[in-house]
Image (tube, rainbow, N blue to C red; front, side, top):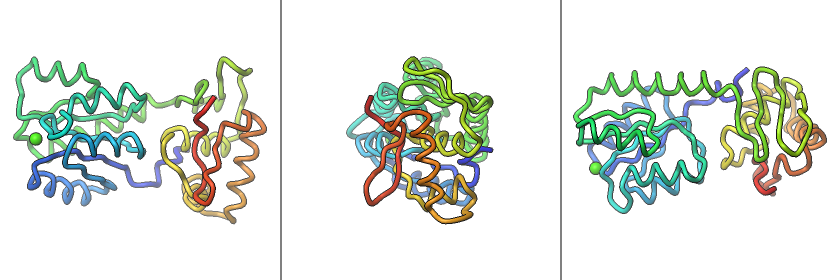
Length: 226
Ligand code: CA
């Protein structure tokens, strides 16, 4: 079970051309994406570092911080969200520069909107196919075997729901989830939010207290400090 499958895919759009940004916001919204838009590179970097996204669409030429610099900084901080770079510069050298900066795909402007949508779908599909394991703060969680491994411990097998809960937190490590969100996304909304607390307790018992952080008054987040 993919705990994120029920939620709309979250997309970060960083584009400084207001007309293009508005058109993309509306089209991608109609396609079912939950979208945040940033009009400059600094804002895009801030959003990319502080919120979890499933895919990023990024203009190359941006005020404040160039699109490729933004992407390089995100990658350097461990953000692996697949990114598609839009650029008016469409020659092979620019494409290579984009891929070198950590982009998964590169689309020259002007582009056909159907092609953009198809590429985004392909990007997310590829990402999901290869994302059969997710990084933990000190190891990995294998989603097929449900084994949590790490240098500091023996491999630990999780139950289906423990695995789904931890996978969701680990896939969006910077996001704080409310108990209601977790109940809806991991437990199909059944029961009371106390069931979330119970499963957080199970995870801490198996993997150590710091595997999940309590964010007082807000909910839970993947543990950060080791
Ligand atoms: Ca631009």
